[in-house]
Image 1 (cartoon, rainbow, N blue to C red):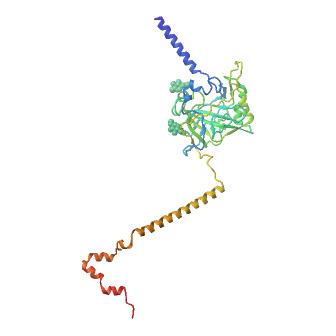
Image 2: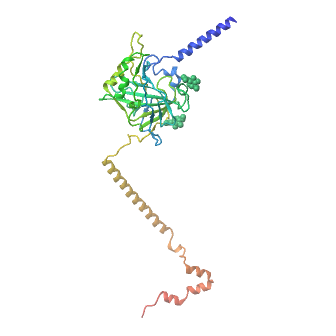
Length: 375
Ligand SMILES: *[C@@H]1O[C@H](CO)[C@@H](O)[C@H](O)[C@H]1NC(C)=O
Ligand SMILES: *[C@@H]1O[C@H](CO)[C@@H](O)[C@H](O)[C@H]1NC(C)=O
């Protein structure tokens, strides 16, 4: 009996430790449990609807029913400060639940925003989504949950259409972006994983591009473990510019290690590589800009080409019609053609045959028809 209890206790302990290691399984982008190994520990990461993706604008489908995205309450930040934190994977800022987004198939409530970026060396990489194979330097994600169908984020995050994320591609320019300064100016206060800082609240909508009507839409996943395939993605077409020094700050100030760890690890290249599309559709709310614009020369070539084509076709049609007409007159010789029918013939048919003959051989009529010439 004691043995059975002991066995049960050991089993429970083992089970708990397994569950525990599963729940807090550490992952990274390029070190132990790097992104190529995520799927071993987080099965959804190996699914068929993963994010991010490359948006190939020659294959997106224009959907005129996609309305402009409408941020709700993004500007009503009140007097409570926001909190910025270093999660060890990114810089994150929780959003009040009265903020949300409309213009999607459901109403979604805001949860948090965070960023992904590169390492500041060489070509511009750092964004998660790419457009026609081109990376941007960084990417902002504003995460929402479906508050029409679910009670909270924990319930929604595993369900299809449970989450909606707005994705903004960032690139470096010459001017300081004052909206992003609200976040980037405080990174020095949260250099190590687990650190938090209260920052003055600001209008979150100023982080988004001006044009909220041009975007790409597809069904995908969280871009970090556990990679739940529950996200309705909106990737804005317009990129937002931050200054080179702002970008450099993002790329070099934060550590993914705790302050107690002996060797600090810079938080860099915290973006996932693009995933296979696997038969998914990517919709666009606008006609793709990559649609070919013809030059004047090309237009004249097309007009002349079409004209020549039309004339050629007319000649062929004329020739074919002519051929058919001439062959049909050879087919049916005049001698075997049925005699022309007329009203007088109908009358003649009703007469008795002899009378008809008599009419036909009427000498007076013949004279009338062919009068004799005067001698
Ligand atoms: C989320 O909602 C469910 C269902 O109402 C509830 O059971 C759960 O406790 C909630 N979780 C949180 C974190 O609020
Ligand atoms: C996303 O999936 C839902 C089904 O859950 C479908 O109705 C919707 O059309 C899909 N959206 C896109 C953009 O493919």
